Image 1 (cartoon, protein in one colour):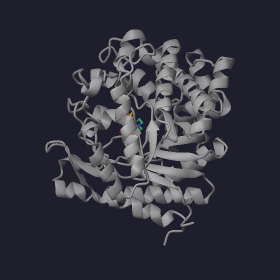
Image 2 (spheres, rainbow, N blue to C red):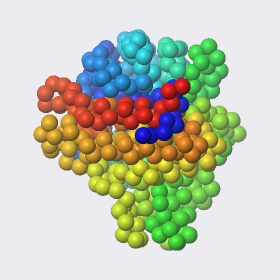
Image 3 (cartoon, rainbow, N blue to C red):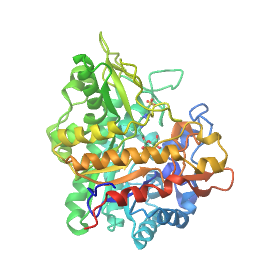
Image 4 (cartoon, rainbow, N blue to C red):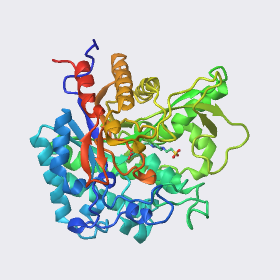
Length: 478
Ligand code: GBH
C-alpha cells in the first residue's frame, strides 16, 4: 500500500500543445505559425509530415474532454495558438474574435466537467508574420511588446483560467530553433541546413528575450488581473537529470552540475536570483547578454510556481581544452553508460530518452533546494516506446512499458514530496499520440492511440487507465 503523501487537491492529469494536436491551420481565420512554414521545408520533419491535420483536436474538443473524463483526470494542460488569436501576431494587427471564442468555450467546457485548465501561452508556434516582419524571437524591442499585448488579450478574455504558463521550454525555442536548427525557425551556423543563423550567439539572445517577455507578462498579470481573478503564473522549464560519469572524478561531478546549470539555471537563476549562472558567464563571455537593472527588476521573482518538464537522465563526463563556441551543454559529453558500465535505462523510440525514475527524484530535490522550495507543477512527463508505431493496434493498446514508466516516475515524485519537495500537480505527456515535431508521427507519446489512417479515431491505451489509480493511492483523503 502506498503512503498518501500528496495534498488532497493535487492536480493530476494530462498535457498537450496546440500545434501538436489541433490541425485546422486555416480554420476561423488562423494565421500561419513558424511551424507551418518550417514543415514545408523538405527534410526538416522525419516523415515529411506537418501539423496540418494532427489529431484534428480543433474539431474534436468534445471528444477530447470525454477522453479526459474517462481517465478521471483532475486537470488538463493545453496551449493556445497565438496565430488563432492574432493571425499576424503584432500589437497593432487585427484580433480574431473567433479564435478567442474557441478557447473560451473550451475552458468553460473543461470547467463544466470539473477539469482544471492549465494554459500555456506559448508552446513554440510563433505567428509566422512576426518572424517575417522583424525576426521574431531575436528582436527584443518588438517581440516583448507583441507578447505583452497577446498575453494581456488572453488574461482579459479568460478570467476563469487560474494557472497560466508563459513559455514552454524556452531552452528548446532557443537552442533547437537557433543553434542546432532542428526546430522552427531552423537557424544554425551549418549552411547546409540553413541560409541564416549564428549558433555561437543567437540562442543566447533568444533565451534572454524570452526571459524578458516572461517577466513582462507576469508583471501585467500581477498588476492588472491577479487581485480580481486570483490566478497564478509561471514558466515551464525542461531539464534532464545528470549523474557524473565517474563519481570519483571531481571534474565529472562538476560537469554534471554544470549541465543542469546550462539547461535549467540559464532561465531559473535569473527568475529566482536575478542573474545568469557563473558557469555560463565563464564559458560564454560576452556572447551571453547582460541584464539591465530594469530587466532584473522584471525577471527576478517572476514565478508564482515552477513548471517542470522532465523525461530522462544522462551520465556526464567533463571535456578538456577550450569549449567549442557553438557548445550549449557546458563543455561536456553525455552518455547512457557510466564508467562502471552501468546502463541508465532501457531504449525508447526517442534517441534522447531513457527511463530513470531515480533521476526525477534527484532533480526534484535539486530544484527545490537551489530555488528555495518553490511550489512545483510537473507540467510534462512521459515516454515513447521503441517500435510502438510498427505494432498492430491491439499491441499498441497494451503499453505495459509506459505503465511501468509512470509507476516509477510517480513513485519517485511521491518520495520527493515525502522528503519535503512541494509538488502540487502532475500533467502526463501526453493525453494522446500527436505530432512529435521533427520526429513527425513515427514517435508516439500518448496514453491514447490516435489512428492517423483511420480518421484520427482515438483508442485509449492501458496507460490511460493506470495513472489515476496510482495517484489516488498517493493522494491524502483529507
Ligand atoms: C517536450 O520536450 C515538449 O514540450 C513536447 O512538446 C514534446 O512533444 C515532448 O517533450 C516529447 O518530446 O534532439 O538530442 O538535442 C522535451 C524536452 C528537450 C526533449 C530537447 C528532446 C532534444 C534532445 N526535449 N531534447 S536532442
